[in-house]
Length: 161
Image: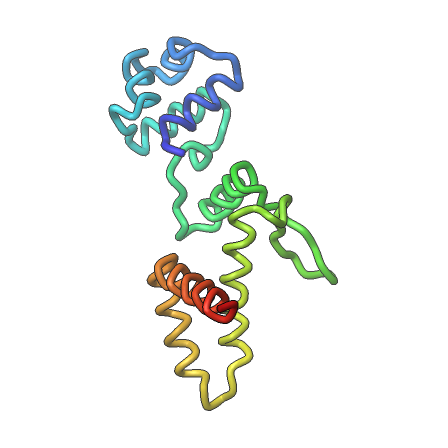
């Protein structure tokens, strides 16, 4: 979701017009319109003013800064809202779960889990090779995952012949 889409989402949730947001933020109505349309990108200072006028955190409308815990939290909120990723607790340990365990994202994270577990379960002699493969898998995702899926499908098809 773009910054402009987020501004529009929060503005509409508060039943405010672009003009009202502009007045509250000390900006022009065309500026707000252009941000929402994606024609312009607000500066950090403008984002702060708009966020204040919408009574939301600047992090809520900014692109996530994954180098800060607040940015990571807002990225997690986005994942909850758009992909059904929700916090949970298993045996006292905090975890992330999926509302729909059959969703595409859940299926892809399950593939990630299998790759991760393969590294964790590698023998001490294979650890370096497993870690290198895992890094390659992450860096080339989804290409490598797709190649493996196609290979598996071909093998299943060939075994039926």
